[in-house]
Amino acid sequence: MEAILEKPSLRDQQVASASLHGFALAFAKNGPERNGVKIRIQESGTDIIVPRKALELLQFILSSMAQGKAVSLIPSDSEVTTQQAADMLNVSRPHLVKLLEQGALPFKKVGSHRRILLEDLLAYETKQTKQRGHQLQLLADQAQELHLGYE
Image 1: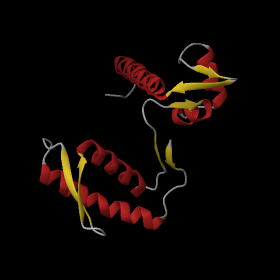
Image 2 (image 1 turned 90 degrees about the horizontal axis):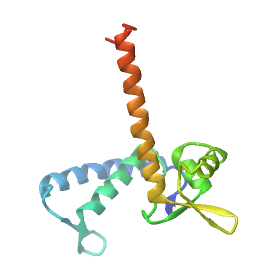
Image 3 (image 1 turned 180 degrees about the horizontal axis):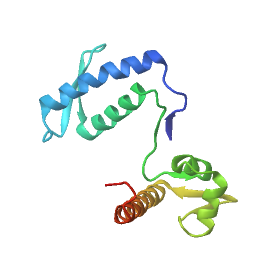
């Protein structure tokens, strides 16, 4: 896992923010149908072609840094620890372990340690987000039916 664990400095935030403008210009100029974008490395004068998806990821990283957020980059086939998974879901580690033991999330044991596939964790998070949205919509509909001021 590659990570910037500390929040970016004010200077890094400013540089990231300024770089975002260049990305907007590059995307507008090249259009969505192009697979790659040519970038010139100023120090060496070298031109490289970067896949559009990689640029979109870099744009997201810069946007997060411009907002002062720390960034983590994890390959989708990685395994994460229970603490990392709990941090990603914004829950306590004991709560996550309870979810694992209840079968809500698949995991494997390496010795006495539990490991969770990142893709399983992301699928669980997506499922939970959809369920939450559905439940909120039911509550909103019910509030409207009861004329509770949500008109």
